[in-house]
Image 1 (cartoon, helix red, strand yellow):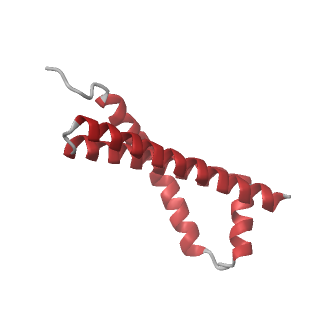
Image 2: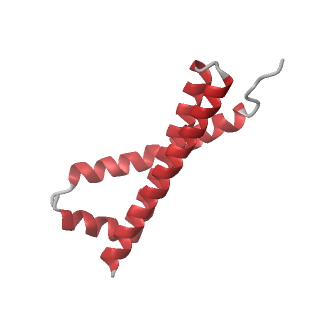
Length: 117
């Protein structure tokens, strides 16, 4: 039996690993959002400027985008049957998630470095 998507195990493993990363980081971020007393812009900039927080936010963002990209990929594979349209949508999916990742990481680093200066 042949399949058009032979790398299912790697895909499955990546999705599970990203989910495992998202669980503690999502709980941490949720806790931070709920327990913050000072919600001012300056307080959030100071929060993101802390190296540990900036690093955790970057890992959370990248894990979230990887998990999302893999999920959308499966949806496209399952519901788009035309080869050309599927390839186009897969390329757009990857490009959109890559752009979001680059912009997000750049924004976090920009805030962290600007606040530290």
